[in-house]
Image (tube, rainbow, N blue to C red; front, side, top):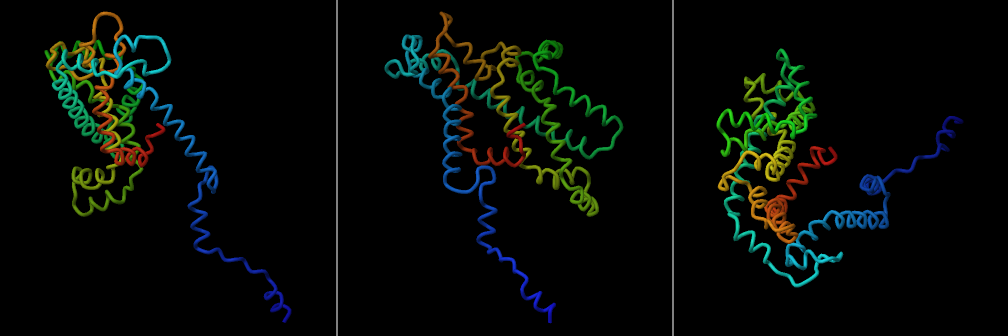
Length: 305
């Protein structure tokens, strides 16, 4: 009887409803629940976005000014009437459509070859057991620390030796070696479950089949992120195409636009117009594929690397 009374007087724990549990899980973890944290977070993001967009807005505003207004003192980006004279001069002095085609062709070839080579090398490092694997991996990691500027002279001598100067091959081939991308892909491949690959091998799949049918479909986010970064780097690359090309018909957009600037002093409006024209295709590409780009970077965790 005493035991029964003790059990009956024990306080019962209140049951949490599904709605309260869901609200707890969906509440912000860093700033806490409520409207004020969201307002503060939105304000901070708006300020950071404004700071990030300020150089772009300033470049566009300067490119729409005359050279006299752009060179006049003052902090305001708009110092006179708007004009497209700088764009007209640049487009009339150079062959922008050909340079844009060359940039797209070079960036696309560099991206395709780099992704193919890097994924194969990374999968070999992640799953291979061949002799010399540790040495090759150490060399790959060490190559990340080598500044690209140190390789300009040896690479140019190689292009001269193979008579590739002023060719697409000379622009593309030196850019397809990306040790950082190999290392990033290797780390991702190592995190994939081996059971899926073993199941495919039990079903009779070869190593190539396992790589193409199992590993690559699971690696779409990281491969997309690597392709985006490589494409942007190849599009914006100025130094190497500038060194290895002399033919105006083979110049990329950044190199070609740099050759049409006026030789009489610093032309601020024309310089900003060239920068806007060179970055405009990337801006359009980002606006068209922004969801896929953001999803790929967020999924792979490369945003903070």
